[in-house]
Amino acid sequence: MPTDLDGRARAILRANDRAGYTVPNGQVYPFQWNWDSAFVALGFDGFDRDRAWTELETLFRAQWEDGFLPHIVFWQDDPGYFPGPSVWAAGRTPATSGITQPPVAATTLRSLWNSAQSAGESDLYRPRLEALFPRLMAWHRWFRDVRDPDRRGVVMTVHPWETGRDNSPEWDVPGEPIDISNVGDYVRRDTSHLDAKERPTKLEYDRYLALVQFGRALGWDHRAIAAASPFRVADVGMSMILLRANRDLLALAEELGRTAEAAELRELVARAEAGIDWLWDGEKHCWCSRDLLTGRFSGFVTSASFLSFYAGLHGPDKDAAMLTHFERIGDRVRYLMPSLDPDEPGFQMVRYWRGPVWAVVNYMIGTGLDECGYSAQARRMRADTLALIEHSGFQEAYSPVDASASGGGDFSWTAAIWLAWSS
Ligand code: GLC
Image (cartoon, rainbow, N blue to C red; front, side, top):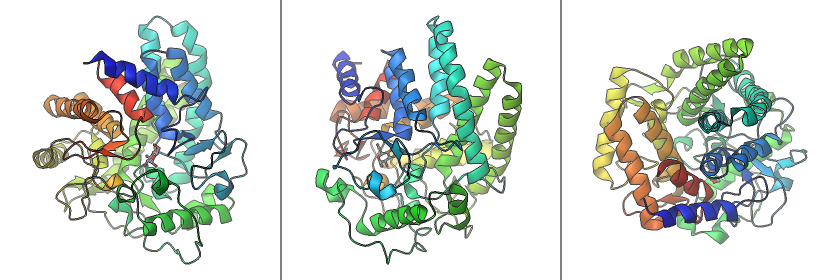
């Protein structure tokens, strides 16, 4: 692979480094984002191991006492972003948002630990692993206690931003009961940096803000929010990512000889393996998100549907059905994996999570396919991702049709995935 892209990727991570954490992009996203940091750490790990660990350590410095890990940490304010810390009003130092994001961090930590071991640096990094482990445990317990109160093995999300796939059409119908009549006036900042046709609509933004106001009115009491939110969805992406992360945290617990925690995590994995079938849409023959309030399936094949492999689920019939979707979509677009099925009427090749491809999602899908032995499909995921970057640089997202850019440029997690996946 061309080394100039390696150098460029490293330069992007360095330029977006704010001394201990990395902004996804200096203009559009000038703070620390939760799952972005988990991917960014993978990128740093190839050339600055210490900095990779610091990325996770900084993120966990913003963890709340009950284990909750926020989706944004506002280490310093910046007028270029809305909604900023005063809108969230979470009453924390450092200031944070009041919602979380997909828990990729345990999977990253396992990977950082394996790489430190291979480099003969276990002694140096073991104390850092020991310090991070209980923090990860606390976050995963928070998911269990607050976001799966009925112990069903699927995760509740209470805001589309928590899923990381902000404006996916999966949230359209579950979002209808959100009362937007009192949202009031506000000025969006994303559309002053980027073309509005690449961004969520006004209706979607009104709903995002109404949910922020709802959480704020409840003082960000997460149990109260989970009991009353008008938006309560089991996101297929979040559920698959958490299952995977629990497996990785279990491996770390075993490594550290924490038998009680290992037993707890085994129980979580078993519960998720049993419960996740609730997200199998038998009509669509696909893993789909599902509304927890109505039981209704989204009915959409999205990039998150393909995370079942990454979650380590094994089932010949379901795998075959997913691979059939994979082939169909792969014939329709030049670059996999579009965030929305291109056969959907709502597919738009540059509108955020309604079509474009994200390198980080591709990385998870490709990793999972590879681990499950679907190597041809895994090879295509990797090749398409690298081809997108070679074609258009380190963008936030890309059109699956012609590789054109969508969103911000010089994007940290895209640079990180290049570094983690190209060598
Ligand atoms: C957008 C994405 C989200 C990401 C954030 C920063 O909100 O939808 O997944 O974490 O940008 O990159």
